[in-house]
Length: 415
Ligand code: CAO
Image (cartoon, helix red, strand yellow):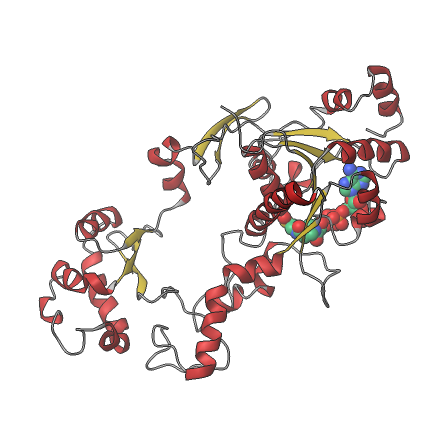
């Protein structure tokens, strides 16, 4: 079956996590992704957090499936020429170097346009134009600068960063959408363009509801679904809301049977208004259904802490899976807190291709997260990540270099 991005060629100049997430997605949709790496070194993540000596790390393999790898020293004059021929041949150049690195290499926007006016140049940077535009940025810096850390955690604790890589993988997703959109516009204009996804912007986009709450707080001085209401205090900025739901239906994380020894024996419980009666029946508090303190969502808000404490008395008598099964029979929204071990072993995620087992010639079998976006006409086959320079000869031949020329360039250290 054909793939959605068949025929699209990507010059993948990305490293670490944010850029590689983006190009991996494009590869899964069928683009030919040619990853350019420095000979002898490659993407720094190949050797970071290694669990098997001399094998590409899981950090690298899990972010670079379905790509080809070519080594080029782009600071070597002959290597630069090879990169130029790649620029001429590709549709998109994706990079996430520190600000200015591509220019210093000699590949300014103007130069790239000269070489290929149809080229789309897509970049991840830490910050957009402004006071911090020249800064190098990693995941947690973006989470802090984008509003995630100040709004995550508990009121009496410090800001907290999330395990979800919203700064890196989140921005990679944003960039992928920008690239596909620019490709679509190019069909009409015939021109390339620059695509920028700044990590601070990406994180802020994912924290949109907190900017909503900032404005609600400034207007009314309070937010009744936050744990600070009614007995705590609100300051000038959106506070950390613990495990409170970010939406209009109050929720909290509650202990389940076994919580004393299992750090993940918890369930997320949402007191969705339409099923309030069902919740009361399940936990044995029928008298709450018509009680003036509990009858309506507004009446319940000042009592949420007590309500969740009572519900927890019930959830603590069930495992998270037992609770899930009973609550779902009553259409009560809830979710077990799943450990990574449980997720890795989940047969249904294997069946959908969301968790995939991949075989690698050096490291052997490992698990990865497959394409989370499923297209009915463009299925994803996850192919192992390339070894460093595995496709150098193949790509050089496609660029028109003879084996002798390749050998010469290799001896010069250009590739
Ligand atoms: N041949 C020759 N030189 C190469 C090369 C190649 N194939 N590939 C890269 N280089 C050079 C670059 O030109 C750059 O050289 P100069 O500094 O002399 O211009 C150098 O390698 C290192 O690039 P870098 O500054 O991007 O790398 P770093 O490890 O110092 O910084 C990071 C890493 C992530 C902080 C920085 O790249 C960055 O801020 N990127 C933008 C934001 C981002 O994506 N952050 C996410 C990180 S996790 O996903």
